[in-house]
Length: 108
Length: 118
Image (cartoon, rainbow over all chains, first blue to last red):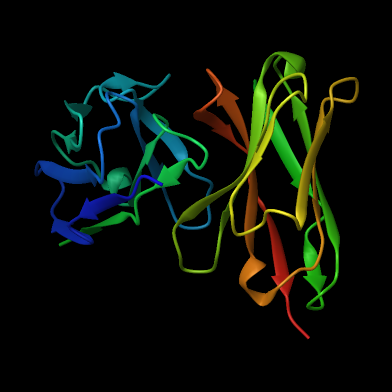
């Protein structure tokens, strides 16, 4: 089973700042890494798939990069609605599909 | 518009059973694989089960293997999860999730809560 480790667990930033979230895999997942955003009381929403492809309707301030075992989600300039929990997920080797434990992005 | 609406959650005693349903609309249900993903209170996401578009392949997380059964009815645009021998650790919100390219979770339902407690 591939283990995904996200860092940091919590990130405190202000609107307008740049956010950088990391996800490290226990073995290579090639480019098959996705990112999801979850707000309180809501279902997760797909943001980025296959490392760097934005899902439908996702603003350009969200971008993804990386390959193999190290991946990054970048939010170029934080909007108030971006404060949420972010999960990475791999679909390279399954079952099982695995998720990271999440990074909480909170307002500083 | 893609919609996934779960139902069937609730309170059940340990050792009991529950059947979750997911009604799909807004897309050709029979063309997509489907999944169940759960989230325990205050915890992260855990994939539970997968079923291919034609029901030819099913997969389960080790934590539910032998207790849960996934199924679908393409004529009714519906996905199901039969949960038996429920344990306290199965308590979670259960999400119905569409699988684009089999394994990309592109649309999620709003979730149905399951509580296993005496």
